Amino acid sequence: MPLYKTLPPPSERMGMLWALSGVRDIAVIDYGPEGTLAYFYHSLAHLGTSLKNRMYTLGTKEDEIIFGNSNRLFSAIEGIADRFKPEAIFVSQAPVSEIIGDDLESLCKSAEKKSGIAVVLLPNCGLKIGAEKGIRYVLNLLTQMFAVESMEKDNTLRCNLLGSCCDEYGFYQDAEEISRMMESYFQMSVNCVFPS
Image (cartoon, rainbow, N blue to C red; front, side, top):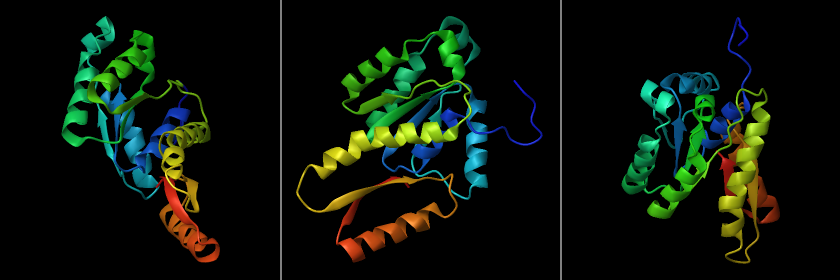
């Protein structure tokens, strides 16, 4: 890993976490060591925003890494689903989970079947540079999961506002102003604002 004088450039995984950080009524579980989210929280503070949902880290232990035991992840998904009943639970996997070789995809599917809540495993993109790719991936995913379905319910004129993310300064104010303009000029209400 290269040595940086300042913080390293954000990865695709960081972009995914940034995009999810502004979405209410969801939960995010980071399946990896505790330290992997420290940079994420630091970057949110630096960007002048805060977390809008429930985000957890499992803090994987040495024996879980060595033996590949993901029972705590299943228990965490069950507990969050029972206690908070979010619209969806997203599982972010740290690079170490890919090294372990856990079958997180089937674990998430069985947790979804048991809880009745969508459990989405985010792709493990390692340490690839390019937060924009991660943001784009999550925005597409959120649109498919929430925006399209809610817009098909009736025939009112509505739009979805995508890309209002914490990597841009003043993104909350921008989203509010664009929503106001759509209503004022086009008589079009905003259905979903992702991710703010």
